[in-house]
Length: 338
Ligand code: ASP
Image (cartoon, rainbow, N blue to C red; front, top):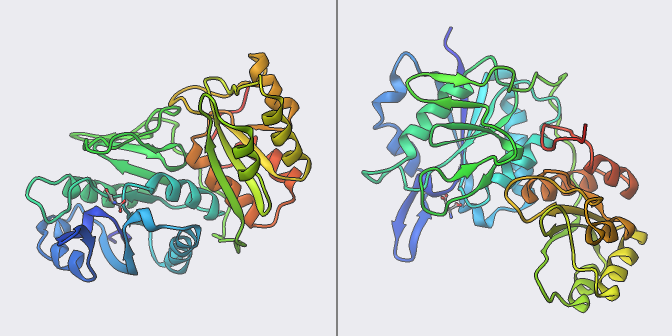
């Protein structure tokens, strides 16, 4: 019996059409384009059930409520399908992929996010290959997690980050080798895919929580940091230098961070570097953050750290539980220290 894949179109360049102000999503347009793709009827392809989100979004417009909507759509059709492809804009795909990895508790089937840099309707587009390969990947019985597929590489969703605004190789997972490559054959890296989680699939309720991300820069003013840390902020992803270091010459800045963590704001340290990890014991400038109650984000991407904070705080965990879970590997998003 042929495998069945849910193709959920959420928006993004892949299905866009050029309008007077640039590319825009258009309802019904993707279905029309797909009906002209003979590849989809090939016997090597799974049976595809297309669902179009309303409204279709440029992913720059996505909010956490949209992550939840995607998760609920997957959950609603989960028992009837073998896998899912989510067509999504590239701009915030890494956030959605990370968020879905957390929100789809008990996942045991592949959920592949893909999109393209050039719309499917254009002659020289990366959309066709990304779509065809993603559908074949989502039909596999040996993948059980949220992934990003782009330009020949299958990446763990909660490790992915957008690295190119214009190249077809738009995504990478700098701290984790790809789960697989698509060339003449589709080859998964042995041992790389995660085992299925114990089911059934569950999607938690997610309360609205205020979080922020703050990238440090030379000369950052403590008053500005204090302003960001005000109520109702519950969590902050602090993007620091190198191995997790911050300016330590200004006691005001460290005081602002310490006062916030004492109030229960969870502050997570991630590095501005593309590769490597936070180790706050390496330098005095990192140790100062540890003293201020900042927790390590290890080698998580800022996207994974932010969506994990929203997931944990939004699903009702107390600040000290959130602080401890942020440092634990839940879905392959971080490498714990040996
Ligand atoms: N702005 C588009 C989006 O993220 C870009 C893309 O899909 O490549 O929806």
